[in-house]
Amino acid sequence: MNNNIGSKNSRGNGGDHSLAPNDSNAIILDDETQRLVNATSSSNRNHEVIEEILELVEKKAPKLLDGLATDNKIHIARFCQVKLYANDNLVFHQGDEPDAYYTVIRGAVSIYARHSSPTQSKATPDEGSRTKFGVFITQIPPGESFGELSFNENGNHSRRNASVISDGSHGQARIRMKSESHHSHSTRTPHQCELEASNVCVLLLVPEKVYMSEMFARHSEKHHTKEKMDSLRKSVLFKHWQIDQIVKVAYAMKKKQFDKGSTIIQQGDRLEYLWIIREGAVRVSHRVPPPNDFRGRDVSFSSSGKFNLGKEQQGISVEIANLGTNDVIGLIESLEPTARKSTREVVASCNTEMFFLP
Image (cartoon, rainbow, N blue to C red; front, top):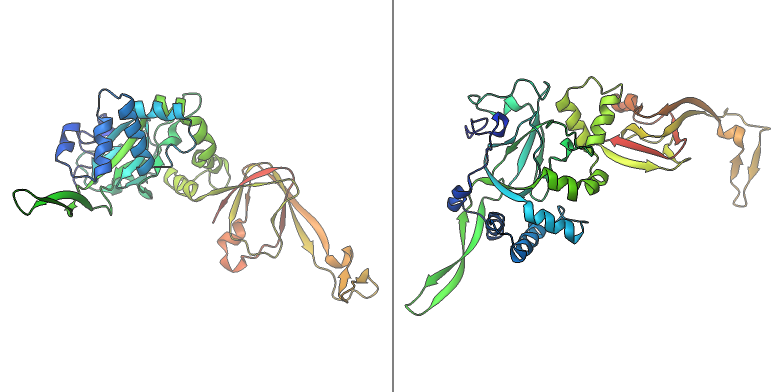
C-alpha cells in the first residue's frame, strides 16, 4: 500500500493531495482523459476549449451534465478542474470544509467514515493504512459523482461526513494507443499498442460556488442521501447509531411515494423491506379471520358457482396504530427471518413518502 495516505500534503492537514499539474506530463492516460486534463489546464478557455471539455465530459461522465441547460453546462466547463490522485492518496478528509462537487473520470475512489465526530482526532501522517479513516462505506466507479451531501441551500454548508481515498486506476490498468511502425524510409503503418496506464484516479471538480449556482437545484431533487441521513438521525431506531453506520444505511435506502388510500403492506404478504416514513401518515390494522363455521352467515354465489363471503366472513379489521413521520415499520420481521410474513396491513392515510431498506 502507498504510504502517501495522510501525508503532510493531504487536504486533511490543510493541503491539496492531488498530483501537481507538471507531474501529469509523465503520467500515461487514455487519449480522451489526457485531452480533458490538457483542456482544463488551459488558462484561456475560449469557445473551442469549452466545446472540447463538454464533449469529453459527455463521453466520460454523461450523468454529470444530464438535464442541465446549455448555459449551465458552459459555465461549468469554464470553471471546472481536473485533478489526479495516486492510488491510496487522500481526496478529502472527514471533517473538512466542502470545496467542490467531484466526479470520477477514470479509476475509482472509496468512501470511509469513522465513529468519532468529524471534527475530532484527524488521522496523523505516520499512520500507514486505511483503517484509521474508519469503516468502508462504498466505492464510487467511473462516471459517478460524490460530495453533494455537505452543501446546503442557505450556504451554511456542513463539514464532510466521510473521508474519500483514491483507488488509483482500479481495473483500467491497460490502455491502447496508436503508434506508427516504420517498414521503410518512405512508409509508416499505424497500429495499436497496449501500455500500462499510470495507477492514478482522475477526478473532475466543480467548485462550490459553481455547483451551487448551476447544479444544486437539480441535485436537491435527484439526490436524497442527505435527507435519508436526516430521517435516520430523527428515527428512534437509528438516532444513537454512529455516523459511519448512518452513512452506510443511507446509501442503501430507496424512496417511494404512496397516494392516499394506497396499500403499502398487505397482511399475509412476505415483508421484504424495513420502512421509514419520510413524510405523511399511515394506518396499521390487523384483520381477524372469520370463524370456520359460517352457516347462516352472509353468503352469496357468483355465476361461476363460487361462493363469496360477506364482510363478516372476510374478517374484522382492527386498527392497531396510526404512524407518522420518522416512524419505522417492519422491524420485527427484519429481525426474525422466519417471521417474514406481515401480520398487519399498512395503508397510507394521506399522500405519503417512504424510505425503504432491503
